[in-house]
Figure 1 (cartoon, rainbow, N blue to C red):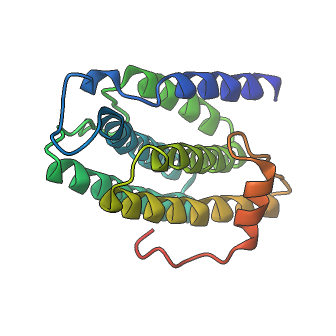
Figure 2 (figure 1 turned 60 degrees about the vertical axis):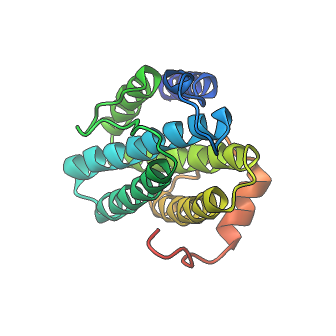
Figure 3 (figure 1 turned 90 degrees about the vertical axis):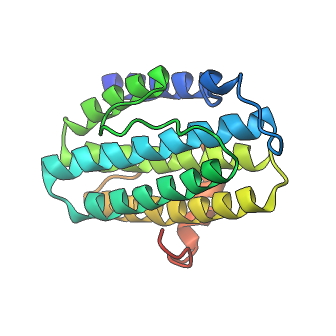
Amino acid sequence: MRKISFIIVLVSMVLSSCSSNDNNDDFVSPTLTQDEINDLSFLREEEKLARDVYIYAYNMYQINLFNSISNSEQAHMNRVLSLMVIYGIPDSAATEIGVFNNPDLQEIYYSLIALVDISSVEALTVGAIIEDLDINDIDHFINNTTKQDLLVVYDNLTCGSKNHIRAYTNQLEINGVTYTPQYISTEYYTEILSEPSGGCGNN
């Protein structure tokens, strides 16, 4: 468990340093700020990270929850891409599963699937960690924009991630494991668990 905790902390440190995509610094949209461009570009690949890890976990353990949520993450990727197309931002995501243009996200993917390899319970914990992280990151992205179309997508993705973290938490509890949030506060996590699931459309 100490090794797993170290990997999670390491992943956290890397993600905190790469929440903006330096590869897009030279691209300037007439209607988006550079922060908004960076956030959308990063979020597109971060949603792909979630999808690809869940595909990997499903292929290993055949737990239907991973398959269902990986499909939701594809929908999240599509929503972000639709905004990128509208604003003329080049797609930041590679087409191959498990391949990332952002080198930091590539390393994070390898770290997460290493945890998935340990056991199905660790794979469920990875799912909770990813959704925990997504909620935290999108909260930051929301603070970087006032544009209604971006905010609508961010709210929808947050709603979906809340549904997902509730689902992973439930499965962990069935396995006798209590998840401790790594990124959002314990108070926020408790509040999320108290809310009903659903209400996000295709989440």
